[in-house]
Length: 181
Image (cartoon, rainbow, N blue to C red; front, top):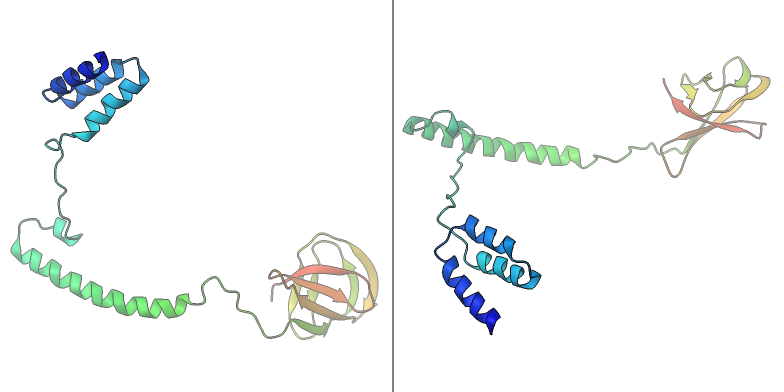
């Protein structure tokens, strides 16, 4: 009964007080359930008078020339032109963005060629000049020591990522490479 009378008296007083005073009184209550109910009562009746209505924003150009009807007409005209241009640009952009993020792959999964001259293996920074004019560079760590003249090599594309493996015919070793020319 004491609790009910306390709540009734408190709610009658709170209608005449400001929000800050109500919050202060609620924070001074030591019993957590009563304090929570106090905060709930404050939020049930918020003060709407202190809130200002949001201004309507018409556009970037309207801020530059405030109060002029001529500027408003120019702004509306510019906005309609911008919308027309934006629609045409978006249709062109959607066509070009269809391939965004895709790896454009060649139909071939591997190539076969010969290394020009004497092949001495690889040492971590080796460049491979192929007979077809392509130049590949070793991109993974590893060392191989051999001496072969004009060996046939196969460069295969990895299935999972966009990396390539170079394998020399007759050797049981391969190295990861990237094309530089």
